Amino acid sequence: MSIVIGLIIIAIGAFCQSSCYVPINRIKAWSWESYWLVQGVFAWLVLPLLGALLAVPSGHSLFELFTASNMFNIGMTILFGVLWGVGGLTFGLSMRYLGVALGQSISLGTCAGLGTILGPVMLNFFYPEGHHLEKLTGSVLIGVVVTLLGIAIIGIAGSMKSVQLSEEEKREAVKDFNFPKGIAIALLAGFMSACFNVGLEFGSGLHFAETSGLFLTLPATLLVTLGGFVTNASYCLWQNQKNRTWGDYGNRKVWTNNILFCLLAGALWYSQFFGLALGKGFLTESPVLITFSFCILMALDVVFSNVWGIILKEWKGCGRKTIATLIVGIIVLIVSSFLPQLL
Image (tube, rainbow, N blue to C red; front, side, top):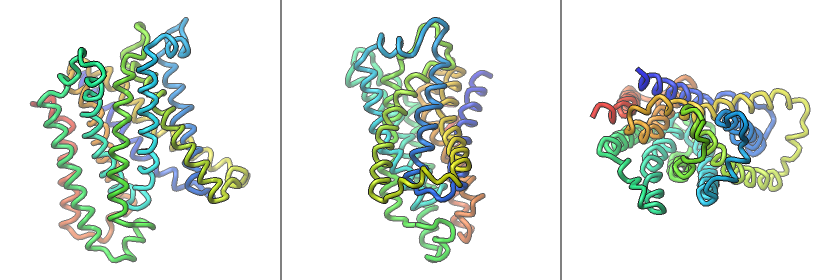
């Protein structure tokens, strides 16, 4: 029963993440770089800090944890967060050129497979005595392959959509739709976003002995998102300077509206990793699912993002064959989430 509860919690986090672009559509009169930076303050700094504080027992502090622990692992956790930040930037662009459904499908699918595999591989490279590759059991690898198969099927549906719709219909669904450019950016986003789980693996020991199992990964999550914030903030501020959009932040007419929706978007985004931390706490009976949990989260992100894509009419005008292909891909992803436990 605890495993079911853990998977439900991860699913709720995935649903929240896939919904984070909905409030962004309510932001008014701000350039992309301005709202991306402000929502990032909430998503990658404020909320992860509050989450990490839940992992600090009475009488201790985060400062104590981050100064007493292995500084090499702390540095690597932040470094992979910086690299993940590149994925975060390109992830946003993939939504711009492919839409919520297809953009998240390709980006998160690539992230799911690579993130699951790269974490143990990188740890084994630096700490071979830990035998981290043993985490990549046959069940885990089969689950990754099936996840990637589901993503490939959804990618085929996206290609079919690109062929079937006229340029006007594509623009109606996604204003800047560009399939070749979007696919290239989405693949890059997925590859770099996989660094998030690598950072979590390096930071897996960053917790107090008294910390509840539900909050163990939250301090590491803070360090990864801190690194990602540095990357994103640097780029956004550069874009503010380049595009002369500094005035966005002083537009008092939209300030309250935009801050509230940036906060909501940031909270929805962070919910996925808060849910991942809590969900792992219920998966302790299954080491396979703990290793595969990041892949499960990303796969469910894709499932729910496509549900939103349908709601937002991004697949409007596509033929039955295209929609059927999309649905098959979604079903394969749902199956992949449970497959390792069944093998």
